[in-house]
Image (cartoon, rainbow, N blue to C red; front, side):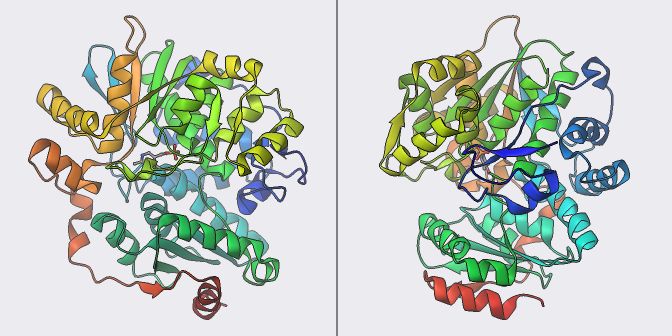
Length: 458
Ligand SMILES: *Cc1c(COP(=O)(O)O)cnc(C)c1O
């Protein structure tokens, strides 16, 4: 399987190379040259999550991993998801189902991809003898998932920058309590945008990049998208492989884009519905055809407080008929604030995607109402999904809403909506007793560089 960049000017890579490099050198995102269709879709019902994962992921990895290596990585990754079904589907109302993706070690769907890629990195790096340094910026969930997945993995040091004082206490503790020597939580003075800007500085310093073997695991990493395709298959298998709509709380467009790939592989996904909070660039783009960047307005669903939605570039690339030149042009316009999607591409996108935006009040009201009518307690991100899904329910077409985090990860919003403070699941009960380990660092690239050079394992 060959991987090409959405901007057409980076080397063609195999799966392992695309996974280890993250972003393409031309600033684009890697995609497979052709998307494989999956044989035997009707026979998936009743198989374990791990077996479905193997069948779905196998066509993408080419000869990067043997079957045995891939199976081993999948088994080790998902043994850490506490629910026997891994991604259980529960019913909310007639025809409306919730896909619970929050039973992993850090209580958000990001564990599904991060746990697997940590295992795949381990295999690839052990084979090559290479050492790498992963640096990431997080508003909370990506960083905790990365630290949890890579702690104790050989040949990798992980540094995660988060904005000091601006992540939830559960998120912070998930980053600061793992004791492994190869993971480092860095509390940066500033906002999430500062962390992300410093990350770019580090990647743009080529001498530093080569010296430490810098690698990225943010949501544009193709291997993360691949891991997220699997639960669309298990959900459809549970529903008898009928035409099904999926509603996905969306920020960087990674999770929902995995659904789009599942559809192209032959899964009977009818529509994919983008659910956004007040930071609604994707909803505006799909409704008006104008992709214009605004200011981020902090919300009670902070993991979706995003204005530039990185993975949307992949959907545009496909909607523009894989025309890398057109994507280069759009991304150049984006630097100046935004672009208009062509009529043809917009029509293609609208055949597949629907969208909706949910206000802060409606998010809280949805948490309250869903608890009263079903007993299910939603996190604010999942509530946005449920609210948008309810607007798009159609008789005869099952709807699956992705529940992206556990309510206990965002207790303040849940308590405001229900009066109850959601309890951490049993496997996390010790979180508030463990000692924290964190380094404060100024919002300054030289300070970060010396810290990384000093702390990394050689
Ligand atoms: C990351 C995240 C999202 C958004 O997912 P994308 O793949 O960026 O669209 C939604 N909800 C939660 C809880 C998240 O952590």
